[in-house]
Image 1 (cartoon, rainbow, N blue to C red):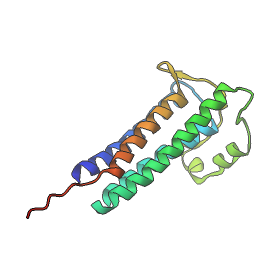
Image 2: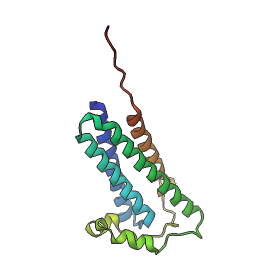
Image 3: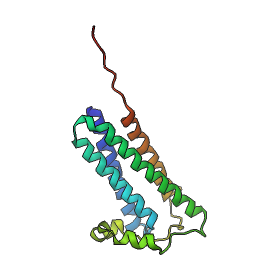
Length: 162
């Protein structure tokens, strides 16, 4: 079960690293995050927290925690897909709308505005290493979901000695 704990903590570190990349793109590259970007950041934070908490629990909780993390990652997949759809259909946008106002009113947006304050347009296309930011998010969410689903579905085979 030590490998499961290591895997959970690795996923958490990966999510935190992705938040670091998001901050780099926002601050250094001046890519303003839109409401859908901020939702994806919240999902990465949620996955990281779930993985850390589950890694600290007894080993019996690993499967349930990995299952919960998988569901949250699938929510991220859906958000990233919706973001890509909005970018593919520029007439549809989440500009200044109730979603942005609601996200900016959340406590984390007040505590860490640099990380959680939305002020960009969802239809903006920012390329990074050849792909749009939501494409990178989609890839990361799929990888995280597969890793956590494998952990959640992993069965331990025990030998019986007769």
